[in-house]
Length: 405
Image (cartoon, rainbow, N blue to C red; front, side, top):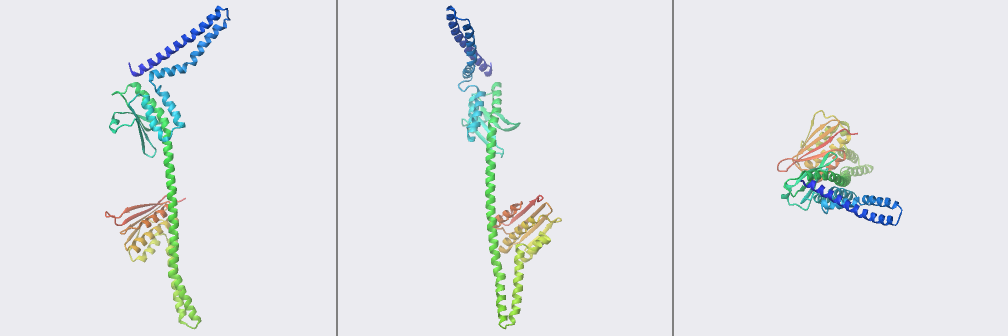
């Protein structure tokens, strides 16, 4: 006789015996009252009332008798199906998310009368939650019997028990399968809660990164503005001051001051054009990224090499502008400051812009951060690789893909 058959026989016997005792007790009391009434020539409806009383008592005591039978048949934990069903109801209302897995492991262990139980839940982000009750040493896990946890046709984890016997009987296996189905429903909310937490954390991190990026761009803009003001003051306003002094001399009868004023005014105008070209060169809008970078490279005596792959069809202006400023920033850092060389390879079409910057010097961390901010602000990506095995030099790839709406 299997354990399942024995349990059902015990339960049926308890239910039958309890109902029989109840009928005898209530029926005897009814007969006693009815007999007394009959001996005193009482009305016959008392017999009918006694019959109804017996029937009502049997119906009313049904749940009590079945709970008693479950307690005798299954032990103090009662019916495992009812226990787990009530547990699912409780966790949907009151149990904290972190407590669900330990409670499931404990409930399944007690319901199957096993020595230990374990729950493993796979989260949407690839992580795994694992809880055992009671706590198991690692070497004991090999003896456990696993049942997959399913939710809407998808396996979301594993429910395992450590049976007391070497082999799991058919009844316990069927019970474990049913419990796994109920537990899968209970753990669905856990996966959802952890997934929402993960998404909220990602959203907060993204918002924080965007705020930091925005602040760095504002700081960079302020720095560029200050540098521009200093350049204008040094290269333009100083010359215009000389022009004013020369014209003042002309007004006092010094004709040579006029020639000096013309030379200084012309130099100030050229300097102003050069500064403006460094901020946004007109050739970038007129002739595109390649020509703008080649023109910019002329300042560095052959230490900047610009090459184009393919047809170099022009794409969105926002991408070309971002690529130009990022490339020029790397050139200023690696060539102008550190004295190295830079090679710029451009691949461009309507829906793709890829710029590779290879340098024998390494851009500073501030430059890398500024490049990443500007590229990501325009929907691109910055890929950074070390130039050689010693860590010297850098290869930076700026990539923009997809059509701009």
